[in-house]
Length: 91
Image (cartoon, rainbow, N blue to C red):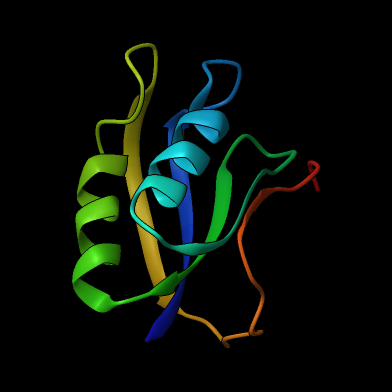
């Protein structure tokens, strides 16, 4: 199990990106959270098997139909041991 933080930039707010991302993470059995950031990016924390996270990051480059993803920054994150996958409020 690993934990990673994603910072996703582009046209990713107001297009259903968070809901799409949460559904994809749950479908793949990952835990963590996703939220909008006031500066226009989407931030996420993913916990799970490395290959499953890699597959979601690849899919996240496409996102839902109305989204346009310009970049995804991936970094290691501490595993806070949370369960489930949540959509958090904007920060």
